[in-house]
Length: 199
Image (cartoon, rainbow, N blue to C red; front, side, top):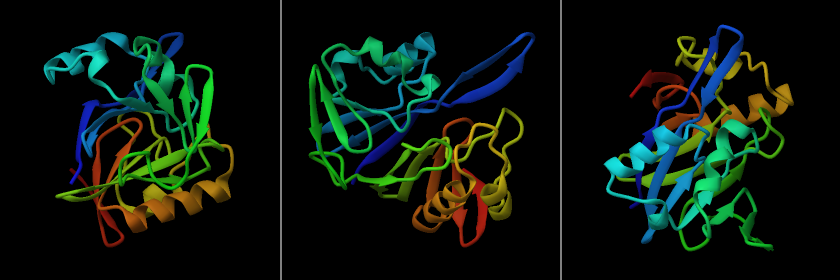
């Protein structure tokens, strides 16, 4: 079974004259691989979190990017010579290698979940606690506005969404398949038969 650990809990907040945000950064250990999901953009937070785990950048086997908003991928620059993956491609230097269905060398399911971004994907990871969906900005809110009841999760407004119908369908899919959801900004939550609670 895979192990999932949130290294950085994402935040999104208004400041005087600017917006401050970085995403949830998740470490998945599966099938002998260490996978970093969405390295975010706060360099100090990420490096400190890795250090607390006894890891350095060289210990990461590859990086998975859920979608291409800068607050989710800017720190990829800290990981030289590490393969970077998105929903269907491995980027290795100047090579692009296609894959589909699962992350190569693992049983981690990769599912297209458009709406917030057209290219957004969700990882479904089987753990001893249940299926964890790393869904990042499929569920998006600013700090203090996270609501975890089923209807709020389905209908939560997303000021950055690209397609409302796709977003709703993707949210329904994730809430149906997952036992736990890690959003891009805010706390992981548990899904309980059309009810949801903080974890």
